[in-house]
Every structure is written in C-alpha cells, then in structure tokens.
Amino acid sequence: MAMNGAESLVRTLVAGGVEVCFTNPGTSEMHFVAALDRVEGMRAVLCLFEGGATGAADGYARMADKPASTLLHLGPGLGNGIANLHNARRARSPLVNIVGEHATYHRAFDAPLTSDIEGLAGPVSAWLRTGMSAKAVAADGADAIVAARTAPGGVATLILPADTAWEEGSGIAPLPPIPERPLASDEAIAHAVAALRSGEPVLLHLGDRAVRGEGRRIAARIADKTGAKLLAMTSNARIDRGAGTVPIERLPYPVDPAREVLAPYRHVILVGATLPVAFFAYPGKPSALAAPTCDVFALATPEQDQIDALARLAEAIGAPAEAPLPPLARPDLPTAGALDQDAIGRVLGALIPEGAIVCDESVTTGRNFFVSTHAAAPHTWLQLTGGAIGLGIPMATGAAVACPDRKVISLQADGSALYTAQALWTQARERLDVVTLIWANRSYAILRHELTNVGANPGRKAIDMLTLDDPPIDWVSLSRGYGVEARRVETLAQLVDTLTGALSRRGPFLIEVALG
Image (tube, rainbow, N blue to C red):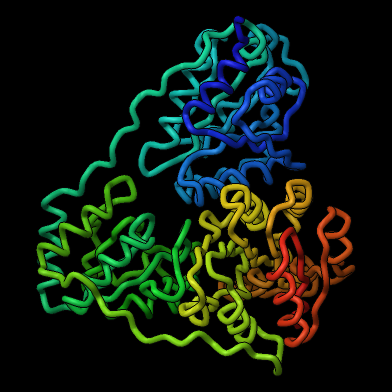
C-alpha cells in the first residue's frame, strides 16, 4: 500500500536508528502523529511543554549516543523549545528536530500562527531544511539523521509542511553514509609534544569525548609521563566518573578562581575543549581566562577524533601503558550536623549507586560536589552546557528513557526547575526511575552573587526580583500534582533517610531539600 509523506518519514527515522520521539504536537502535525501510531519501533513520549521535549531529547542523546526526534508545533512551539535546543547545541547532542508548518499553499494567507520558522531555528541548528514535497520528505529525514550524527553532533531541524505529511510519499529513504571524524594534524601533535617537553607547566584541558572514559585514561597516561595536569571544562555534556576512573576537576565558574587555576600554566592544550572564557563580561576583568602570554592551542577540536589524537600523542612521548589511580576513599555517610552544601556532597558521594546517571543543574549549590564524589560508585554525570536554565528535569527525563535500567539522580536548583517543572508529569506518565533533589534556597542565588560581581548596587526592588519566598514554592504539592511522590526534608538525617529510601525503590520521586 502507498504511504503518505509522514509515514515515509517516520519509517525512515526508525530505519536510521531514531527510536524515540519527544512530542508536543498540534493540528499541522496530526498526520505525523497518526504515522507514529502505525509504525512499530518508534516510542512516542508526550511532553506538556516544548522545552521539556527538547531538553529530554538532549538528555536522551547524551546517554544513547544517537539522536531522538522531537515534534514541535509551528514557530511558537519551536520558540518554546529554543532554550533547550541551545543547550543541546552546546552539548553537541545529535537531535532530529521536527517542526510542523502550515501547508505550503496556506502560508501565503498569513494565518495567525504563521511565522518565520527558519529564522527561529537557524541559530540553534547545525542543519536546517524545509520540506518541499511528500515525495522528498523521507530523504530529507535521512539527511537530517546524518547531519545530526556528523561530528561533533548537532541539532538537525526539519520543517514539515502539513501537505508534505498528508500527500503520497516515497516510502523509506536510504541513509547516506555518516562521515568519519577527521584526524588531528601532525602539526598539532608536534606542537603538543614540544610543549610537553619544554619543561614549562602544561595543562591538558579536556572536553567532549576526551573527558569521557577512554579519552581521560589516555590523557592520564600522558600526564603521568610528563607531569602535565588534567582539567575538564566548566560545563560538560557527559563525564564518566567514580571509583576506578581517573578523577578530574572542572575549571571553576567564577572568573577570579578560574584565572587563578590557569595562571601557573605556560601551555594549555585543548582536547575536545573550547577556549576557556568567562561566562559573562565583568568590569575591569578579561574575557579570556588564560594569561595573555600563555600558549593556548588545540590538539584536537570537538569536530576531530580526540581519542586518536591523544593516542598518537601518548605514543610520541612514550607514555606508559597505564597510569596509576590516586588512592581515594568513598566518604562516610554523615548523619548529623548542618544541612549544607558540603554535607550534601558527602551524602551523594556515599549514596550514589553504581551505574547511576547524575543530571546536574545545581547552579550554585552543587559547585563543589565533584570533590566529594570522585570515589563514589561508578556513575555518569551530565551538566548544563549552554547556561540556559530549565534543562535539569527534562534532561533527567530523557536520560531515563535512554537507560531504563540505570537510576537517574537529578540535582536541581529550585529557580531553574520552575522553567520546566511540567517534565515531572512525563516522568510519572512513563514511570521513569528518577530521583529529583530540589535545592530549595527560595531564590535565584546565582544572580544574588552576580549583582556583586558586575559591580551593581542592589536595593530592595532588585533583591525582590531575585527571591522566591513570597510566597514560597511548595515543591511537595507541586510534584504530587504532576503525579510524582514527594517529601520535604529539613535536616541532614532526614535527607539521608529519605534519599536512601528513594534510591531503593523504582519510579519517580522528588525530595525538596530546605536550605537556609
């Protein structure tokens, strides 16, 4: 039987390894929705808000190492999802972003929902195309998959006019070959060898694939041979951590501590990392964080094969086959004392279960959690990459869809969580195994610090714009309203008891942690 364009597209996506669609559809996408119902192999996950759909697709891609698709409704739906598409772009997550559009002949009538979808999608997309016919839309989908999976990975946006979905399609389109990652140049290897043999302090600044298991092990061998130091970027899409892995710290977020960390080095070798720069401009402070005299250069860019580059560099300098791991002890579980950031870090270090996925949008509360979790049970840590808050709960949702057999722990600032709290409903609907910890300091704490950092002189009105305590958010009631069981804790002992219980059961659970 002939199939329409929508079914041709969905079957092409499934044949190309895209098995999940995070959806928030409208009228123009109904034929795609119907195709999802007819095609085996595509899981449809409903999200109440488009930012939840795009954030979940990001979290899924980071853990599955392949794209999911989204389904968004016209330009306004895309607009609602753009913040987390920005985060996905910064994470270099492969993502097939399908956006419905009016039928090709209807756009000329300027109906109320007509907008410049290409103009909205362009800044967050590595690839962008508007479908022109039902016969070609399956091939458009195949091209989108390849674009999303081409190193370093990115958002491929396919705009789907309604008539290209309902008219007769072509059937499944073959997937073009996915390009291999290009190799680092011999000149870059030689530059790194010279730096490592210079006798001057050298930093290997790691990101992307270099900060994950194999890349970090090779980097540790190079450091063991040469005395170079390892440091991860401030924000990383994914780091595999815990006992048995090479411990690594991140470049601090605040400008002054970051400059202090980088000051001793005369050479900074970027491996999958970007130039270390300040998140924002501050009066009287530089944007580039390394010293002006420092030799900062790329061994391998995020687009290139960082594992191959590290392996070639290790061979060139005669690195040992293995690097010894420093002796690290898992922290004891604290049961008494203040419920503060240090105590919470020790609780996490003691209780993170083996194989857990930690989705971190702690912002201020969790800045020092790495120190106390280096020796935790082996786990994977995902971070907010693009700085657009509201990623944490959706990211945990997508990670749980990708890895249903792994416990997901979501570390979540309360102000950021309010942007996409609707994703809790999707966790309940899909019965996902996620424990969410809300750091309830009842303020936009990071912005309180930034008032001072930028030299502003806040008064009562400014402070009021950064607080969430009038009225306070009742996270327990909010969570239960979305169908997720929840509890509020006010002491360290209550946190230990509640988190221990939540980790021992399956299904979504939220803990509101009262701070301050």
